[in-house]
Length: 114
Length: 114
Image 1 (cartoon, each protein chain N blue to C red):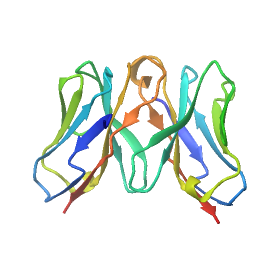
Image 2: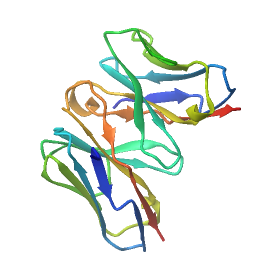
Image 3: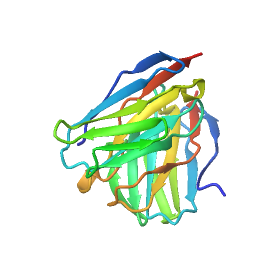
């Protein structure tokens, strides 16, 4: 029943490793997003995808590479992890990019880089 | 890009009192203004939203007002209860280009004291 689901919920890894976070939505939405929430709770957009295509990349280091195999999935791969990448990463989806509608969030992935 | 400012960053009220959180935005073409509530360790969830053709919207104890001329909108919570304690985020969405995504304010930690 979960509308937007992410895995894993927790991820602890060492500096320099590569890791992936998966996201799936069963709402039939066209648009999916990745947000980063830092320790001060600030929610910052990273990527926006519409129908599998990258629309917006908000000055994110190229160590972060999103991939959308179909419009229901948006995965995030991170290379060469750094301490500053520690945060909670939220996937979200909305019906259409151009419509004034809410975004539905996944439960978040807490990434800790040690 | 869009710039959203949110105040105050923390707010403590006595149970039963009202709470008001304010946001300003920079892009006059923005047309969608949701408010999200995030409880500790949980995902952000929509509590109320307003579109640019409406000045005020109410849902039980919560209301949102929008002043498009001044480019600000506010969340009002009446008869606050301890379960209202959470972080509240305003957000703004536009209709073209990179504005077609939710840009969030910095959040307000609301504490309702019993």
